[in-house]
Each structure stands twice: as C-alpha cells, then as structure tokens.
Image (cartoon, rainbow, N blue to C red; front, side, top):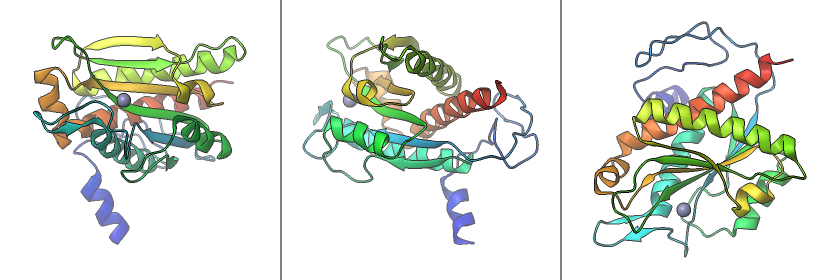
Amino acid sequence: MLKKFCLLLFLPLVISACTPRRAIVHHPLVKETHPPRIAQQPEFIIVDAGHGGKDSGTLSTRYDYEEKHLTLSTAHMISRYLNYLGYETEMTRYDDIYIPLSKRAEIANSHKADLFVSIHYNSSPSESADGVEVFYYNEEESLERALESKSLGTKVLSRLIRHTGANSRGVKTANFAVIRETKMPAVLVEAGFLTNAEERKKLQDPHYRRFIAWGIACGIDEYCCQNRSSP
Ligand SMILES: [Zn+2]
C-alpha cells in the first residue's frame, strides 16, 4: 500500500509509452502505442548524478543554483521512472557527497551494469546558448560499445526533446572520464544551460525536471526495447 502510494506520488501525469508487465498503453501527450514486451530479466542501469559535495558543478549565488543539487534531483526521478518501467537501478550517489569520477565508473563496472547514464546541466560564457546535448565516448578498442552508446544517446536525446521541447544540440563524442572508463554502453546528458535565463527558469522548476527525467527514462526504455527485439 505504501509502495503504491509512493508510486502515485512520484509519477508524473503521464503513462508509460513502452513498458513491461502491462498491456498496450497509451501516452496522453504523444498518442503513441507500443506492443507489450515479453517479461525477462530486467536491465540493470546506473544513474550518475553529476558532481556532489565539494564539487558543485556550475553554480550561481545570484541566481541561486548549484548544478550538483539539480543533477541529484533529476537522477532520483530517472531512477524511480526506470523502476516503474521495470528496470533495476543503482545511483552513484544518493546524497550531496563527493565521489571521484573514476569511482563512478568503477561502481558501474563492479556492478556489471548493462547501461550507464550520467546527468549534468550546462554552462556557457554565451548567455544565448541553450538546449540539450548528449555525449558518448568513441573508443577504437571497443567499437561495438561506442556504436551502442551512440544508439542509446540518439534515443535519449530524441525522447528528451520530444518531452521537453528543448533545442537539440545533437549527439556528440567527448573524452569524459565516466563515459571513457565505463565498460558498458554509456552516455552523459547535458540537459540544458543554467546560464541561459529562459532555460534556467525551467530547469529550476521540479515539474520541468520531471519531463527531462521522463524523456531520459523513455529513451533508455526505447533502446532496451529495440535490443530485446533484435535477433
Ligand atoms: Zn556538470
């Protein structure tokens, strides 16, 4: 009962577009349907809230934000949505604590996670810069992981844009430690610019962050659905 109440409390006013353990469901916002999936061992996903503790990420006292708090809030939402969709999750941090970058990758590798997603918010000297971008590591030693990461990133970005209406800055490669040192498909999401006045106002609203979280969860779900159905 308590669990059911918690689910109702945390879920947004949208229903899953692609979810296991239920019949075809309708998404009230995008009017799409998917066939039910065959129940199987759920994928295990690591959700990484960027920064934390002594590492605030981008911050402003004038506009009253620290990236580390926004990433943690969003990561909690993503984790709950993924659980709701039938996935197992672990977060690299659950509180405002500092965790070195290599330790974050180590957590994912030691858990033998299926996927890794790192959440960040962006900043720029140009206040006009806005939108969402997703990064993956294009390593030559493991081309397959790079291609899978790119595929995951493409789906996450697409769903994020669909659910938030934010500007798409594309899927890009980068040499960030958390996506380089992880051994499974991994992406780093920069989910908007805190230095852009209009976007900052949205990002500071928990309701908007729910749509970011839901978009990311749906993108992961779409990636996993496709992988299950491919031979
Ligand atoms: Zn960051």
